[in-house]
Length: 225
Image 1 (cartoon, rainbow, N blue to C red):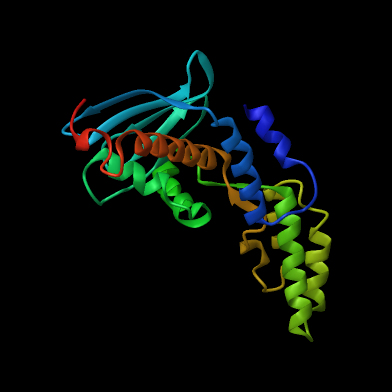
Image 2: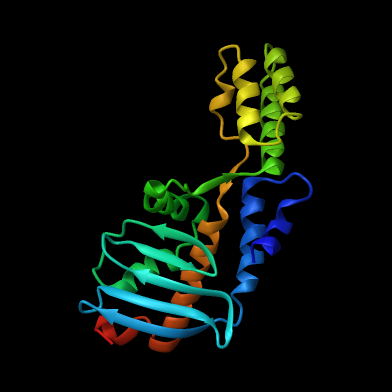
């Protein structure tokens, strides 16, 4: 699965939004045909375990756990992700809908993943060289439009286009050549991480499967099963 996703990371420059869309399309295709393989509820529906996948096929099989502290955990044939903290209705179905039906992946979903995954040391964002080059060019264009007095800053950013191999190299170059502009603080090349996108799409697929099976009220009205 990971090798297939990596193919998306080669090619021309693109924005963070386009990066997100492309990866969403690619990963969503891996969840096509997934069925609800298992569902278990406890604590009057406050906790739940769902498994989605294709019968007899372990590819992208995913287990979703609605556990304590208003969190959702996704793992299986994908990198583990955790989304927190939901403080609305106590039932697991409402919590799944909270994330699964949220369309704001670039900000809200990523933010909840950052909260949920922060203690594990794995954040909700990543670095992509193509996006970094796109961001640098955008910044250069903005400075050119702003008019007089930006030549030195533009020169540094232009040279930085050759220092985008990884985020550490880029930030070091910008820091070393900064003249009070704080360019190194910019989030050049930052994108939503693959585990967050994969986890969200698993939640989305599971939510739609349960919606189709039970309707808007959700599984068993939130009772144990």
